[in-house]
Picture 1 (cartoon, rainbow, N blue to C red):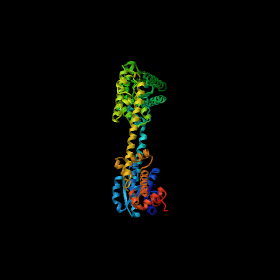
Picture 2: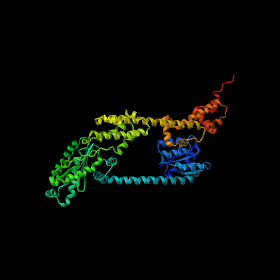
Picture 3: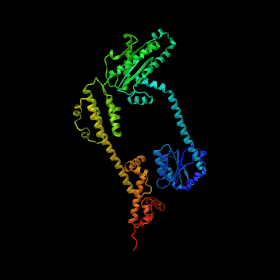
Picture 4: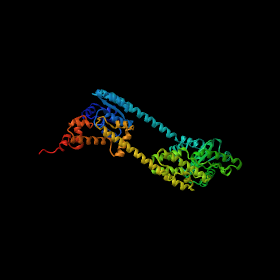
Length: 540
C-alpha cells in the first residue's frame, strides 16, 4: 500500500473526502491528516509519504509554500493541490513547485478516482524502475569476480588516476593502502609440466591450481593480490613501511614461499620477475613493465628463479609531485572540513613523499608548492598571509626546516589557522544573512502573503538553506520568529493605539479577524480585547 497525507484547514472537508473514497481499492492506505502546511511537514519528517494532497489557502503555511518545501527537500513525494476557481491561478503557479496535478473544488469522488489511478500508475512505474535497477545490481554482483579481475589488470596495464583506483578498490574490497608498492609476475615452465606427467589439456587446470596456492599464501598478508594476465601470474604487494627494502624483503619471502609450495605440491617450476618499488599506487604500470623485463632475464639466469629487476638494471625513481588531486583534497578539507579533516589531509600528503633518492633541495621545492597552494586560498579568502604563516618571507621560512617532521608541524598549524579563519568568516556571513532576513520580516510582517519561500526568493537563497540558517543561527524556525514579531506588534498596537481589532489584525498580517482572534488567544492566553482591557486603568 502507498502512503498519502491529506492537508486542509477545514476538518469537515478532510473527513468528507476520506469517508467517500475507498482508498485501499486504489492501493493507498487511509490518508493521514494535517490542518496546515507546518503540521504536514511534521508528518512528512516522521515518515515520508508517497504523495500529498493539499489545499492552497490555509493559515500558518499555505499549500504553495508546502509544495515548494516538498519539492526542495522531498523530491520523490508527489504533490497534488486542491483548489477553488478563485485560487486556480495559484494552482497554475504551483506547477513550478513540482506539483504533479490539481483537483478543482468542490471535488466529486470520480475526480479522486481518476487522480488516484494516475498517482498509483506513476508511483508503480517508479517502483518498477527501482526493481529494474535492483535486478541490474544483482547481475552486477554476480559478475563482480570477472569485473574485479579486469580492474586488477587495468591497475598494472592502464593509466588510472589515484582517485579512480581508491574508488574502485573500495568497490571491489581490494586493499591497496600503503606507502610502498611492487608488482611481480610469474610464468609456468612448460617443460616441468611435461616432466611431471601433465597432459597438454591440463594447462588450464594447472593455472587454476597455481593461482589457488598463490592466493592462499598471499592472503596471509594484509595487502596482496594475485591474478592471471596473458598466461602469466601477476602479484600486487604493498606495505605500510616507508622503507623500500622492508617491502622488498617481504615480497621476496612471499614469492619464494609460493615458488616452493607450487614445486612441492604440483611439481611445477615457476620463473618470477619482481618490478621496481613505487611510492604510489598509480605507478603500478611501471612496476609491472619492470617485472616483465625481469622475467625476460630467465633466458640468461635460468628458470626456477626469483629475479629482481633492480639487481640487474639501474634504479629509476620518479620525483614526488604535489598533483591536482592532493591539492584539491587539502583545499577542500580547509574550506569545508573539521580540524581533524585538515590534519588527515596533511598527513596523506606527507605519507607519500618519503623518497631516499631526493635531496633536501628537492623536498624544499615540494614544500614550496604546498605553501603556494595554501597562500592562494588565503588570498581568495581575503586573509593576511603573514598572520597565517607567522611570516611574509615564505622562502626563508621553508629553508629553516631540515626535516620532514619539522615542516609538517609548521604546515599543519598554518592549515588549521586558515581553516579556523575561513570558518569564522563563513559564520559571520550566515549571521549577516540572518540579520537581513530578520530585517525583512520586521519591515514586512504586515504582508499576509509573507512566507519562507518569499523571503528565500528575496535573499536569493534556497528554502532549505534559509530554514537551516534560522534553526542553526537563531535557534528557532522562520515561522516561530514571524509569529513572535507579529504578536509583539499586535500587543504594542493594542496597548498604544485606538485602532479596531480588525485593523490591528490586518496591520500585523492577519486580515481575517476571526483567525487573528483565535491565533492571538492561542499564543497569548487571552483574546485581543481581553489583552487590551487588561492594560486599561479601572474607573474610580
